[in-house]
Length: 407
Image 1 (cartoon, rainbow, N blue to C red):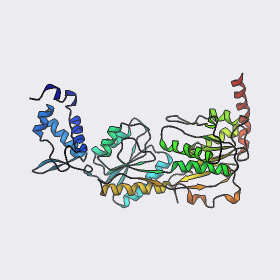
Image 2 (cartoon, helix red, strand yellow):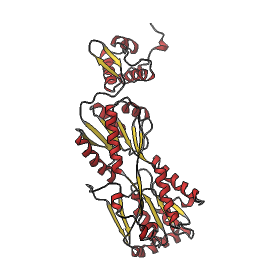
Image 3 (cartoon, helix red, strand yellow):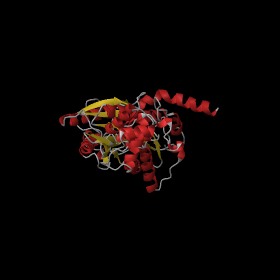
Image 4 (cartoon, helix red, strand yellow):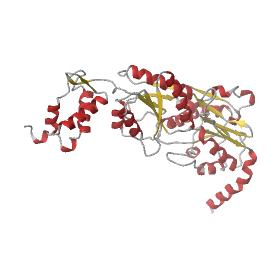
């Protein structure tokens, strides 16, 4: 009889905890690959549980790919994923414009290879962990994940991404053992800022979204890198972010006031193209002419924006390539489950139009061919058409707000 202090506590005697303990012993090498796991009787005695509880624990370890049930031998430690009984591959995302088009693109590629892409929404009460758990329990072949939340249970993600092949897009969540497709976001932010420097801007601010996602941090880093390389002094008051996690819409309150100051920036990098319309509204409310008074460049070319018919310069992210890379990594991981995970980068391209201050002779010819998605898309881009006269009726409102603030 072992000493009482060495007995597993009652709290640990659930089949989930027993399965977690067995998995940890396999991961650490305590139970070597191909070696027998403890017998059902041994596990019953160790944990003080029923035979049915032990069997549920062993079934879970097998389903997660950490062990195999060999006829006439028993359960042995194994490497690799749980056996897929379907050709389903999940796309876990939030259904933005880019994600919806990516879903169609990847679905077409996978269908040709005998797989079926299943959309799972992870924006509501269903978390990424919930969605991945569903995939594991229903024996999906894999999952592509576009994170919509910055935080998750790292231990749970580690367990689930060890059970089936997983590819993350845009942001690799801590704990996930998954392939990862992203862009060189530092370089993208640097290119956007450098374009404004080349266009003659003397003071360049930044706006858009800043939250915990690395891609947004990296774009901001690239913006700073370009300024320092050209001996520009960044000023904290020119960091006019207008969005963060879980907001319903952009808040341009700070940007509105900053653009009305005497030392307002004459250039703005917008870290994400979806916030260009709100940025232009703030500029027009401040009575600025675009691009004469304020030049703008953004990252992303998935929103169609013009002012007086002049389009937005943008660092276009090649979403089609991202989708193809995700499919390639997924299929390779299915075929080679024990290989190391990989991180790969899709390309981006600068598209020059007039709102960055470039002359028409510098504008990119046939920009549609370089945009994020090539050819016909199943969903139209959002369109925003502004004119300089739009600002006339709003300037008085902005001035009144400033007067009220100072009184």
